[in-house]
Image 1 (cartoon, rainbow, N blue to C red):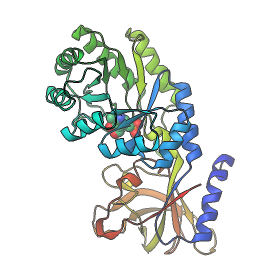
Image 2 (image 1 turned 60 degrees about the vertical axis):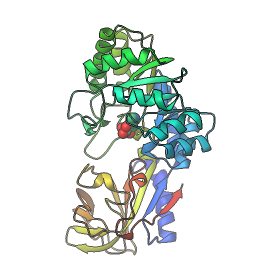
Image 3 (image 1 turned 180 degrees about the vertical axis):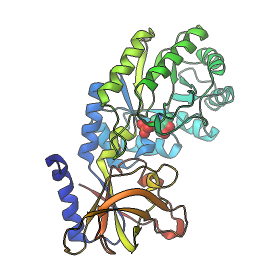
Image 4 (image 1 turned 45 degrees about the horizontal axis):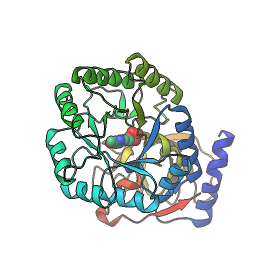
Length: 378
Ligand SMILES: Cc1ncc(COP(=O)(O)O)c(C=O)c1O
């Protein structure tokens, strides 16, 4: 194990040996979040907005702030209240393209939110209605991107205006916006930097055809992390591809924003699950798809790095591959992996899942009564 990784993991291994947890454990290293945020902001030549949905733990949010981030992408009133209570001086961007009218009203009047995204005329009219035709709004038109399979979690098909709609929306939104922006999302865990360049070229074409002034370009989230079978190019390749495409398309005069979630938090978290039973290569765990391990399940099927912590000393064995089952009675609560572990794994041992700092605890449900878990900060 590399020295840096050993240093990070040892306190967790010690904690598990001392506490022998019977519940699943979610671990967060806030200092790692802070360092990720600082490094990202250093390389990206624009403003960084943290996508709160990825990990809304107050310690993660505060760590992102300590790393220098002052903008937060929020998708609901709950996230708005959470961030404004914790950090009253930051700027909130309400980036859900289809919002409840009451949420818009309260976001504007109670929480002072002035930045809203939309991808339809209906939403534009809703925003204007619920803010009593405010004149201090910064509106973003989210554009749809062509389908591709370059991202671990595809995000097309649900949100975004097609080019002709986007042109008409930009023209209408221009008339009522203080600042006007365009945003897109290339898909989460985007493995190909060139997909950002393609999206920027599409944006430039839309702006050109709209024939109006646009002030802000928001290149969204999607910046990837490393998983056993996914090794993306380094961050600087993404940044230079984006910066180059912006320059080539003549968009350098626009304010630039990105909305990273996963990249800032994923490698700063882990889940520890206990093995409750074993049938050959199938390990029954006390955490699963309806808990903190959704992304290991059938919808996303990420292969997270895993390590074994034995409940009692046994001889070292050769590695074997395993599948996992979560604690609920549902047959979707399965994680096929395959996950490589020592062959002597047994009931009572713990499995550490690394890279669980994003899209993990935030997905937990109470299905079958398995909501309880421990949270620790190391
Ligand atoms: C609008 C928006 N911005 C940013 C993000 C964060 O994406 P990622 O975690 O891939 O960086 C998401 C994720 O779904 C999103 O919907």
